[in-house]
Image (cartoon, rainbow, N blue to C red; front, top):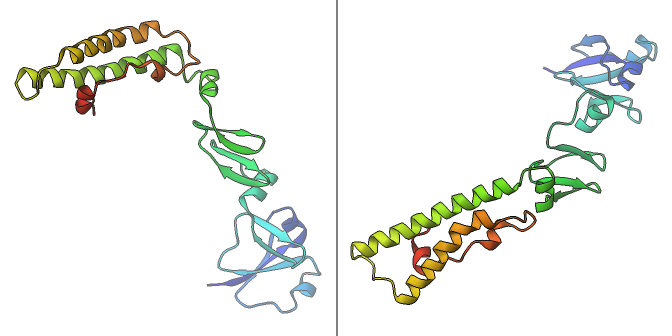
Length: 195
């Protein structure tokens, strides 16, 4: 049920709800009744955080930005104030540059320690296992007669691919180059079994 709430105007200007009176009916002469010190609010409940509007001599619920400005709230992780508005962003994959949200670069991840030589080598080892598993499926199907045997060229290519994969983690030394760029290319027959 809506009610009429009369608040101290000076406190309302500070964002504080100091209530003089609550009435189920409008006090027509509230300005005189409260000696010019009250502002009227009509509604179900008084907003927890208020903002005084001088032009209409009324109050409304405070915006999140107004609460922040007054110290009634803080920015959460993944929030930033841009051009007077609170904006959410993914702090893991994005950053703020000149009041713009932009995607982080590889260099950003390196600088913050998310990407390291060890993490890249581990990523390569995981990838190598996936590719070796695909090759093993192919080899098993060849053994069981489901697949045709490898041609000499295919066999030679797979040997080169296999050796290259053995060396990838050990030979990777330049963190500024994505390790994926030095992954050996899978043959089409292995690719068929790669999930």
